[in-house]
Image (cartoon, rainbow, N blue to C red; front, side, top):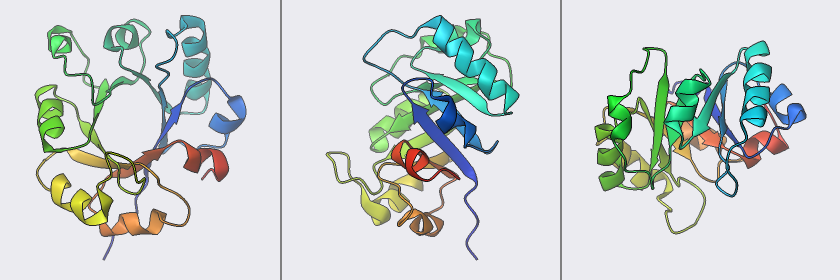
Length: 179
């Protein structure tokens, strides 16, 4: 019997109250905007709104700021190979996640001591496209919990039950439908 996939991760680039308001508390919000430097005021607005809704909130690619602002955790993109954060004092509740596209990047994320690995791209046909079968094979090479990422939509979400993924992540899925 296939398990129900309940963990959802929503990538946002700016604070949009209406989109975050649609999410349930099984959704984790990840602020990821590489085109501009994160504004502390905007991050705190998102943090406070998420706290009221009992939604976890993470910041992408800035562990130091995540710790300073007492966020729920941080997300390390695949291009971040740094292990300097291992020197930081992280509390047990601090959630560290990372993304990978292949086995080599999975090993780097394991060295970075992430708790969850986003494996991309399961459905979106880009240069990192894995497809369903390759996704299943690569995900078996890690003992970490794997999150499906890339091209997930209402029409293909049921296919995720064929994988052993812990949850899924995206942008457009949450904007169009919402849970």
